[in-house]
Length: 66
Image 1 (tube, helix red, strand yellow):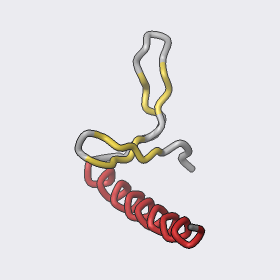
Image 2 (cartoon, one colour):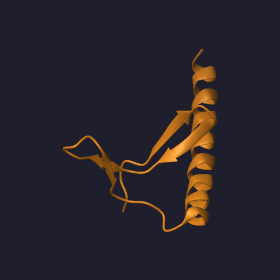
Image 3 (tube, rainbow, N blue to C red):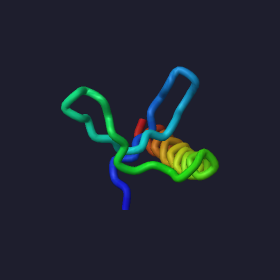
């Protein structure tokens, strides 16, 4: 199980950030990462699709409240 995967708004749009640990020298060491670029893109597609669905459901729910 991987925890602390984040969806972040970057300058070119949303992307998925994998967990990293800050080292004493200020650098970051990745704790979990995909084996290759193809796997990264597959994981990112799935996570961003689910994220978009959750955001859309949230917006619909908040419109019903107002």
